[in-house]
Image 1: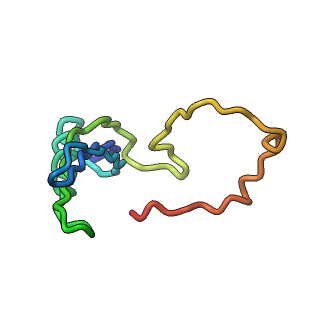
Image 2: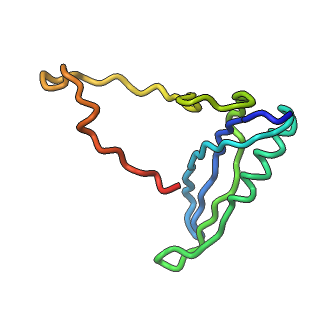
Length: 113
């Protein structure tokens, strides 16, 4: 029986002629029969997402899978509202205007996935 897994993939992004690199993280969901199979599937999916293209300056950009950072078994069925990722964020100083919260006033953005 297959169950759902989540994997955080880390990609290394390089631009030809540039000694600096950048990283990007991508959380994916997929089903698999076992943890070992899930790891192989995460590698396969990550390698399948690798790409090479020319940017606006005609430089070659490469996205390559660097690692599978996390791999978590979720369940056979994904329940409504199931958390698949959580990230602690740094402390910040509250201003007087930050005392009340109005989440319905914030319009969410899209990541483009």
